[in-house]
Amino acid sequence: MDSWATGDGRRATGDGRRATGDGRRAVLLAARSAVALYRLLDVVPVFSGDDRITRLFTLVPGSDFGVDALSAIEAVGGRTVPWDEARARTYDLVLASSPKGDLPLLRGRHVLLPHGAGYNKSIPGEGSDSPSGLDPAMLLRDGDSPIALHALSHPDQVARLAAVDTRAARRAKVIGDPTLERALASRPLRERYRAALETGTRTLLALVSTWGPESLLRQRPDLPARLAAHLPYDEYQLALVVHPNERSRLGTFELTERLAPALDAGMILAGPHEEWASVLIAADALITDHGSAALYYCAIADRPLVSAYHSGAELIADSPMNTLLRRIPQLGPAEAVEDTLRAYRPGAGRDAAQAAFAHQGDALNRLRTELYALLRLTPPDSGSPLRLLPSPRQADRSPAAFDVHAEITTDGVRIARRPVGTEPPGHHLAVEYGAAGENLTRSAGLLYRRPLPTSATRADLAWSSDGWAQHALSAYPGCRSAAAILPSGLCLLRARGHAHAYVVQTEPKDEGGGRIAHADPAAAASAVHAWLLSEGTRPSSPVRLACHIGQRVFHVLLRPATDDETTQLV
Image (cartoon, rainbow, N blue to C red):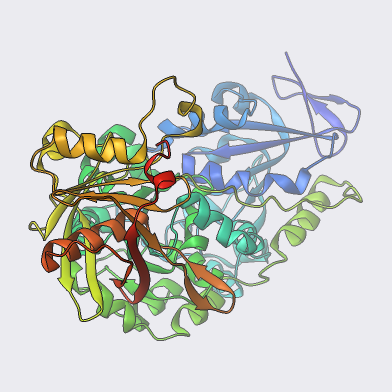
């Protein structure tokens, strides 16, 4: 049977006996759930490049949320030790981010790492009135599984630990939060993350939901769909971060089915590992319950933040999260979200983050020093590489049909597009040809077509831009205008009854400071379509219009198309 190195340079055989070894060290990462595992994975870089360390994983039984943990270990390619085998061996260090369950049965010196942003909640049914993670029965150990180090993220947490037992507090050290450190280091990638999400000029509004009966998704399950129905698509992008425990409870299929109306409207569902933090970096504003993810958002930047948490028994009165919720605006109806976000006052989030996280930017180095001291090894000279967060994935679904509300102004048109079916019908229905079903396509007032992917443009048969527009008007008698978006970003539009095709040319908007904003050509096509219908004119010379989208005004030039533009392939 295999044997594993112990801290004194000897080996422990499979039955727990010790023998002389070669000085290698075995570190066991013990997790009860996926979220606990993700916290451990943020710590693993402290041993990066050190071939003296063997890194192993085991699943601690007893959690209702353990179903996804083994899949997560497999996804990163970790070597898993079955629980019965893990209990039979002795390890140099056992790293865990939760003291719960049968963790004390694992032999070796234990290190408890931060699990979330401090101790903000007390979970009913855990057998103690203490904050979650500070149950004395789990912390005070003797024998073969002592806790060698409580790695905490803020000095106030030492006081909380001392209130449970002074012996436990003597083993505590403030090292900061390694998960936050990755997020702080990744802040320069914000524009890359927003590009990956295809946010564009929109305000990215993120929602975060913890787990349990007081979470946002349990208390206000319709909030994502109501926001998707209320907020104009060209002005706002929605993203949702769901606690991994809630994902485990429901399963991905059930979760996505429950969220289907918002997901169909283009909402992003962030992945539970790493991706959630990338989305928080990319976000412009946040809606939170009482989960601690909001504290990470506050530490990343001081941006608008509102509460969707009303009351409950879980939140600890003097915790950083409770202090934050008392100082930020509270969201009432979903339709009041813009005014509520504007009511946020800078400073509240920054102060809360400072009360939750110490040693920001230095946590991994501090932890590395402590862990190598426990292993009785000198750290490699290379140091611990800080692994930046990966880019998040864009939304799995995007709306292909919009109810377009249009208002003629003195200088052009103001429009607001919302995914079809989320709001009462507007001025017209705009449908993307080839992306929506036949019923919606036949009902469209404006049909528009985006360029095909590059890999598909090598077909032997292709449409010219005006050829397709004329075909669309012929095939769909209810359609009033057809618009082909060209690869250049120009848009060829043909209106029923007009003698010639037009080109819709939208000028970029100078945002100041060297930033340039671009409008979706399909949105500009809707503005022109509404203007042509309202004016009843057939312009034969160029016309300049203002396209109002939210607070931005894009200047649009409408002019007759040239022969070259009518024959471009789409």
